[in-house]
Image (cartoon, rainbow, N blue to C red; front, top):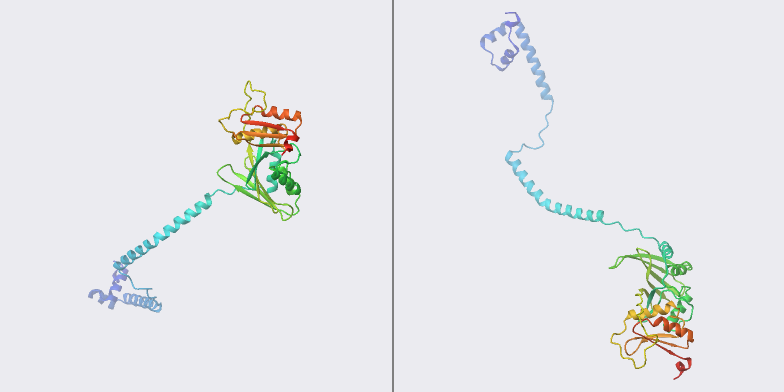
Length: 351
């Protein structure tokens, strides 16, 4: 065995410090200078290490150590508390999701053209209106007239004559009032105006309502309803200063009935004719107006359209030239439920 092997090991020296070294090894330590020196070095190192530990302050724990039972109890209490808060939080999240879905999925509003552009486009698309009528509602009455007048003759109906005067004073076309061209012509002549466009989504087809208001002039407000698919004017509303509101609505003209074969050439029923069981309908009156419009006899002439005792359409005329009478007879002859009577100027003026 070498000289190093006879000395005590590091472990034996440490055991000596702890008092656990056998007596034989302790006697060797007392007799061996080398082992005694190593023991002193080990003791010095141990003392230095202990000094370092003593000089370094040890921070106390932030809180006492919890027992396992306490940790489990706190976890169960926290879980119950979170469960109570979870229901309102979930409800709020659902409401927020519904609101966001409504906002994101809501259809974006369609772009509405300004009034001027709508009227210009509508005027470009307007066609002939000779086969349509216009219903005018004023003072509780409903008056029918062609959509476009073919003559400039004076109106014989007092209401229509008054309206014609108002339109003329406002520089608005009375010949074709339910028209974007007429509306635009009046609108561009205003010095001050306020336009508005409303999108109408009613039970029928969508439409645009173009309205222009002004603070001057006879006509203070006018509005046209334009069908969205073709910008065709279907309704109108007019407010004249000091007058009741005037409303207009387009009325489609039903097709004229075909002339039956072998129809009598007599223009009117004889005085002793039998009563017709089927009364005339509003469509029959429209047929009469349309037929008279084809020869320009619906306005400007002494014609009166009403209903007789048998509820047939009665057309009366006075003071017409023979040629004009024959034209009216010819155009009204094919129509059912119609009576035509002519009177001379002298007989019509008689008491």
